[in-house]
Image 1 (spheres, rainbow, N blue to C red):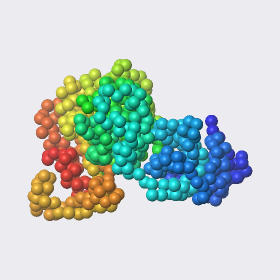
Image 2: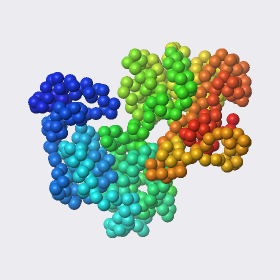
Image 3: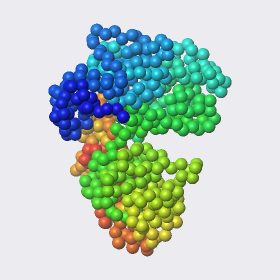
Image 4: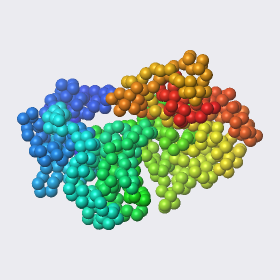
Length: 572
């Protein structure tokens, strides 16, 4: 195990034990999570040069200073473009003539995964040297001055590449494996994929789509739930792009007839980014979709997902119940998993054992036992749930209740003193009761175990830098169910579009929520098998704010737009 940096600084005679305790106390109090060396320099106890020497001792890496008169070879600068250098906080230093390996100077050498990620992008070994953060930034500005490449530049480079041009008029099925491997390793193809990945992570995209059609090839990425098209590459690059992504995710590039799933793991700025890869054979070649799972994008704090204060207070009280079933409902990609992760994060304490079973496990959280479902070998939700009950859990998360078997085990778990969280696909909270009944669960068990149902949708948030008040048209007011007179008394906003939001007018997403809390009257209505409309009206009488009402509240508070709420909700 590597020695601690503070201990090394002390062994080198730069600080004494009292100074080390000062550094550790200041580090604990730091709100930004500063590193030991940064705190020591800030307190004036050591110099940056002394920290570099200690890091060199700790990591077994050499120190490389970057004075302003240092010349970096052009082949090194060409190996790593500006976008990649800034994303990984490195400066290219040399390229080996022997094995083409690249050596970089790192501003954050404490992240060893950075070198692995760079190697994944570049397709060659990458070695690291330790550098000063400010010197790395200054060197980036010098060596990349006027060299910022755009998508259009890379596409043009591909169009001008004679080696790739020879495949332009050939049938994809007649290109042999050796040729595809050669295309996938071509510098312009690597550069294109790297740029798409880094741009998507920077713009907080959730998915990237590579789609072959008969006459064209499309690249799109999804930001805040909406797909945006990127500059398309030439159609003949389809097999090269699919193969390059397969190489990065360790898939079989020779297999083009079957769907494949893989993953790419990266480390950017100290943050782990997991990319799930899915390939699918289509009529005109392989469609590839990348799902980006970036912990820094997802906010696992219940107070920051858009839940109104009154709903949040009720939810906080509900999740602390000792037993019962709490359901979160909504369509695919409505934020159900994020809400449940944030909930478990809130409940995560040393006193409780929390076990989850998910398909797939999207984010790993310290303190939770997380089980990935794998139906191919019999590891289903139901099988996992049975095993979980023998593991002495306090709180259980079942990724999704899909069948009666899983539902019955979840009910048994709640009846034996466990709180069970899960998801369902229903349009609103009251419909969850009907769904449970349709799945075959007896009415008396629904009323005995269900404590609450939270329905939710995701809407895009107005960019706060270009938010503008406006007067909606009569047609827009009619979509919300308002008369012109009612609309005149309320405030409405939209985003004009600016540099901060890529001229979309939106930045980020928030949830709108409908919380149904069970009580004795509602349970009696379920037992008497009342109609869904009667049940919904009763829920509203007991204080349930519908999705549309929650959306209207968000509109008037200047958080989202009329169009977003109309798209995601229906008139009550």
